[in-house]
Amino acid sequence: MALRWPESISELVNQLSRLPGIGEKTATRLAFFVLDQDAAYADDLAGALVTVKAKIRRCSACGSLGEEELCDICTAPERDRTSMCIVESFADLVAIERTGEFRGLYHVLHGLIRPLDGVGPEALNLPAIAQRVEGLGVREVIVATDPSVEGEATAMYIRNLLDDDVAVTRIARGLPMGGEVEYADRATLGRAISARERLG
Image 1 (tube, rainbow, N blue to C red):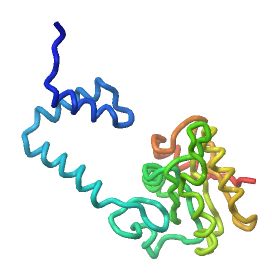
Image 2 (cartoon, one colour; image 1 turned 90 degrees about the vertical axis):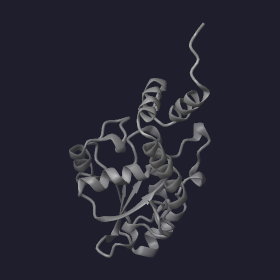
Image 3 (cartoon, rainbow, N blue to C red; image 1 turned 90 degrees about the horizontal axis):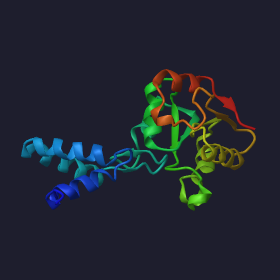
């Protein structure tokens, strides 16, 4: 007869395996790591999960994440308001910030156009782009979506949203086709930002 784990362990493994990039083996390791810690660790972990869900919200201007109505980047007076970088996710924003190559504003899409999955432009943070660009007087928009079919389609959609007097550039091919911005190393991503190219 096969060994059956207690239901509470099975449920923990099940919930952990729902995280992206976490398979059943890794979820099992993580579950037993949590079990090996004292009760205070489990309380702290659970508390952090509850707190982040309660406090974090999307910036009303750019769609980034923060604890206030506007994120730290949107409210920072030293940021260059003539340039805007459009990214798929908050993780991509963080990756680009780490390069130190970009000092403008951001716009976070929270996804890419994926027609086969039923994700159209209206499901993303796309409609606000043209308004923000015009309202802020942005002169350059850098599209930093992944170099995938969906990333390219989203980039072209953004190009078509904006007037011709706005320079729309695409991060250079420092990233491999099919690669993801979030997982690029710092040097590669820095080169891609500094050697961006114009779209259209």
